[in-house]
Structure formats: C-alpha cells, structure tokens
Length: 373
Image (cartoon, rainbow, N blue to C red):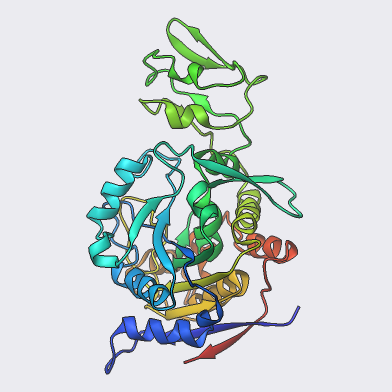
C-alpha cells in the first residue's frame, strides 16, 4: 500500500487565529472533496469528563462544524455513553457534562447528540469484515445514521492502549455500553453485592434468564449470560460491572475492529490535535501535566497513518519538566526515556498492536508522507 498523506500545522499563530489555521489545514487535506450537500455529518469527539480540563475546547468543534455547514452539510457533535461510573454514563448526565464543558449549540454552532441513547442501549450491530475478535460491533445508532463521519481527536496517553488517538476515539468512543464491555472484557459482568438493592431490574432486562436472587441479591449464571451488557446499562445503583479483564493487546485490536465497523462504506475524514498530552485518558476526572510541549494539528483521510504520525511526533519532542514522564526518567537515572514515551509511562502496553491490526484489516497504512502547511 502506498504511503498516505498526513497534513500538519503547528500552533504558532502570531498573525491568524488557531481556528483559521485548523480551517486551512482541513481544506489543504482535501475535506472539500467530500460531498456534504444535505448530508447529516457526525463530528465524533470526546466531550470531556467534568473535572478534567485536558479535552479539546469547543472552539475547535465550531471550526469543523462551520466548515461542514459552509459545504452544505448538517453537522452534529456526538459521543457515546461510558461503561465506567462517572458523569457520562447516561444521556442526561452526559449532556449536562457536555454543556458544563462548553459544548452547546451556541458555542459550537451545532447540536450535541448522545449516539447510543438514554441508557446506552440504542445500538446497531454492524458486521466487521475480516474481524478476528468481533464479527459484529455494537455501535451507537446515531453514529451509523450519519451520512458523513468526521473524527476530531485529542491525542494523549492511555493506561490500557498506550495512547488515545484517532482509532481509540472512533473504535472505543463509538461503541455502545455493551460494545465497550465487549472490548474491555471477555464477556461476563459481575455483581457487587454491597451495591445491589434487590430491585430485580436486571432480571427484567435479561433476555436469557441469567439472573437469580439469593437473599435479595442478584447473581449471574455465567452459563446463560451472553455478555450483552444490558444489565449494566439498566442497573440503577451501578452494582453490575464489567470485569475489565481483556488483555491489553486484544483490547487494542478490538478497538481497531470497531473502528472498521464505523468507517466502512461512507466518506470519513480525521483531525487530531496533539496538545495538552496528558499521561492518561480524558475519561479521568482530572488531568496531569502535559508530558511534552504542544505539537500541532494533523489531518488525513487515513486514521492509521494519522495515529502513526502523531505518535512519532510525540516521541520526537523533549520531555516536559515536572511531568510524570520526567519523574519516571529521573527515577530511572536516565537522560531520556528508554524506547519511546508511551511505554515508558505505561510499561504493560504496546500501542503498535492496534495499528498493526488496523493495517491488517485494511483500515489504512502506517506509512505516511507528512505535508506541512
């Protein structure tokens, strides 16, 4: 496969706003080649867990939305509900969190839609061509209803996949709650008896009769459970939880397969901002010091090449003093990190696994030509 084109611009903006540089970047990368006329256009991004200030500012979303409208499209911002317990586990709290973080129609120029519905159960099972782990992917319905798909990603570290980039934003981010469980777990949730109040809502929502009750507490018959995750979505006390037991390498590969489910068969375009590169995900309710200086903005039609280019750009930077990465380097008595930055911070991860699998699936290529504007 020939090298893909990845377009780049830095954050220097002495004579023009950064939003205008982002606009020029997208145009240079070829976004106008997409037919947006009267097309519903999903702009997938992480709307930020309250308490974490590392997420992308709404201003960047507005730039993308305004360009889509200029080209005749009908944009909306979207994310899916989370599997973990936080302030984005159902659509009402998720929207409140988004508004609190500044993502409103007034600031972004378009509406916010939580793609998998009120409780994270509004999903479509999408076939994944060539999958080794997920023959079908459970994707939030609104993502699949869109005619055009754009990813707007904040690039940062991640404790399970090494880094969170374009593939993570799409694959994990577009999965319904059941889809997220499929990626994170071998399939069977567990019940925390201390949180179970015996309401039996789980049993009413289980199509396979996997629940029984002992002294009022729910129990799961693993021989009957199919791992659909419906009980997790419906439990009012968060007593039913994913086991988070999938190997990290397999998790990254499942993310790649879910990404393929989302992007196959329709126009897609990808933008990633390498800034405020915190050690861990924006799903945390806090964010640590960036581990490197801000790098710039990247855009491409190829999500694999885009992630590879961003990873290479991060590893080429100097380590920010006082950051977690700097502390690890000093504790190890080194002048610089061994190998590369993400595995230095998260030694049990190998981020290449996801990109290698994505390349095998035909999502793109890790070979890229970097074009600076």
